[in-house]
Image 1: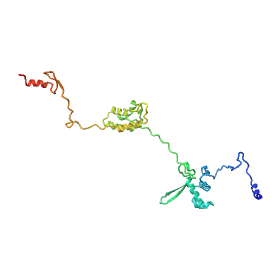
Image 2: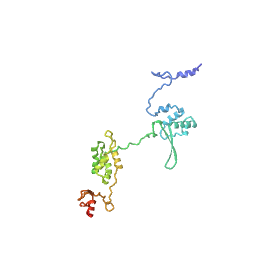
Image 3: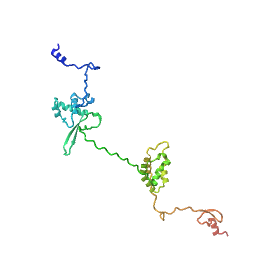
Image 4: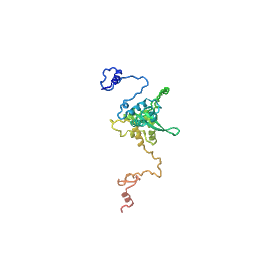
Amino acid sequence: MADPQSNGALTARPCPPRLPGAPRAGVVHLRHRHTERYTVVGNHLAQHRELSATAIGLAVHIQSLPDGAPVTVKALAARFSEGETRIARALNELVRAGYLVRTRTRDTTGRITTRTFFKEHPGAGQLTERAPAHPSPPSPPREPRTPTPPPPPPTGSAAELLSRLRLTDHRLLLSTRDVHELVPTVTAWLAQDATPDQITRTLTAGLPPAQVPIHHPSRFLAHRLTTLLPPPLPTTPRGADSPEPSRPVPLINCDGCDRAFRSHDPRAHCGDCRSRQEHPAA
């Protein structure tokens, strides 16, 4: 039989009114909107499947602390009734779950110190410190940047050659900046005694089919200009060491018999006529 004093103590407490739509069993939340001194805790922590109740409670407590508050085992053991062993075990759970991060750094004096970070959501990205309670005053607004003016149109024979390539193939349309970048390479071709027509034919020969686009014409032309650069023309003048190539002896007709033979003397006779002249018949 139940203790009447116990039953009386239970019935003496005021019962909250039944809320419409509230479940008949289980917890019923009596909501209150906090406007100060509250901490937002994610369900990923409050309903964590692998953390103990001690670890979840410590995590909520640490999250509510201001930056700089001590969260060592001794400091937390002095705050709660759990012993140091149980608190140390719960802190290790938070480390394994990614909520608590400890790093070692060396200060200006060379001393190694341990810093502790609490991540309010381990799966939300990189580690970032919470903003200070009193943020620094906003920096003065920056002056609007003046847009960089475009470079002036390039001039010269090399620039004119590059600008006219689009007349040969519309896919070789270059911007002013592209022409400025390619002018030095074309100038190197001209210095090798390559004519503008030769350079144009080299750059536009064997292009992809007309239906195939050239997405980066400047890179395409830069590759051809670099890999196909011709060598300089020889500068040694022709002289005794470089004789003129020999020419074949011309054909002439003999005045005596009209036979064709080769000779540098247009009035010469063929061998038979010379032999008859030298040895006439008796």
